[in-house]
Image (cartoon, rainbow, N blue to C red; front, top):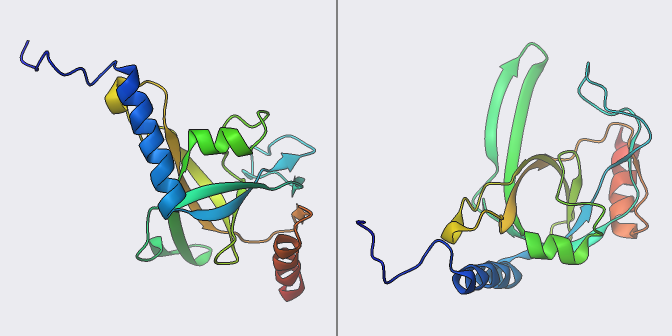
Length: 179
């Protein structure tokens, strides 16, 4: 063997717990408060158009997230057959422990199509992709420590958003009135 046999970096449970605790603590220190708003639906997913016509958002759960892309929005601006499309993306990190501690167990992980309300910035984002392998085999742990959420600003299209939290509902109502 060419690796050092005095250090066990791949199946040491104390090292894995330490790494998990350090990630949780750093996100609690440097992260921001947000509200995770899961999508509920009364019908099945439309495979032709790629959307759910009856989606609604009825509950919100507080979670802390870390803003990974702090400089500016990522993404691209491209001209397609539908006109100019601006994809401003932002990346967040959320730990598995924070999600499991605050969100009911009926939701096993953040899902694409769910919303994230940033309370400090009064901004609503839609989760476009959940990277479950961001912490890829850290210290040999097959379980992931958290998720990377790739989000875009939420574009309202007749969804029902009634979370019971006035600042979120008012933000949606102002978007409805602008349309």
